[in-house]
Image (cartoon, rainbow, N blue to C red; front, side, top):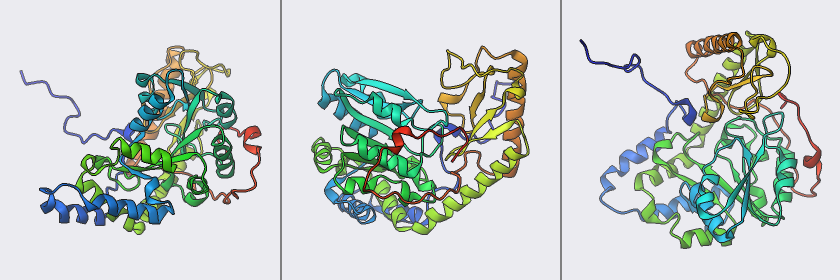
Length: 391
């Protein structure tokens, strides 16, 4: 009898929930790593200052407002500890939880606000959840896992207004995949002195996930407090990650190339969905598929109470193309036949996409939003509602 071996053990596996780029890092980043290998006997030194200076020049932010590292967990711990027992943190649910996961152990309380009908950050509902106990609002744009990108002008207005009431932390990990980045980033608010922190990472479009390097742009006092705790200090960062990040920032052409490649794969996905009427695509940074009721054999619009963010076969079944943990699994209210039909359709779509293209997770629609003026402000975002599937 032969030893047991998994049936797919010899097939390369990709964990789509991690949203890793298939294109890898910039050749300049690889060259920088190779050039620095001989220096591994030395501790990190001036590289911290070099990367900080490069980020400051790119962002138009003072070096004292830049904290290096993947800092979301640490930021959550710090803010919760400083806020004391009873402090609350508001975020969109389901969502990326790196920051809020660190809140409860330090005595904070998390308030999850469901996404709106368009699977976007529900900005009016988030504003309504903010009160005197709120220590911070955490927003991810483009959102993860839904992949939707909030309206540029309305999002900036909302962050501006919320920042007058509490700290607003905006995770822009995927924003560089969007062609109109400058119109959507909230960094200009920080430059104006707003109570806003912006998180960025080199793990996504720069292809450096294995080096775990990123940075936070924050108000001066918050950045100084984090640095006092040793966050972003040279002893917590590797020479190779810093060298690769510096080289990546300098190679803007490569980022443009990756963005264009992902856009091409996105269009291939759109063509696939158009060829299969039961599948409805949603505008977003990553693909979300919906099965219309006719496809799963059940009518009605009721949502499953056990899976409040994943409509069951009685309404719509939402499946994320990158199979994020928040969107996978089966709803036990779905009819067996409907579930089988849904699974077959999705399997066919995934197989067809794989045959055509190297990526399943694709980038944002090539929409062009006008840059929002930073003054004067309006409250349009409080009333704005967008229908599912709109840009």
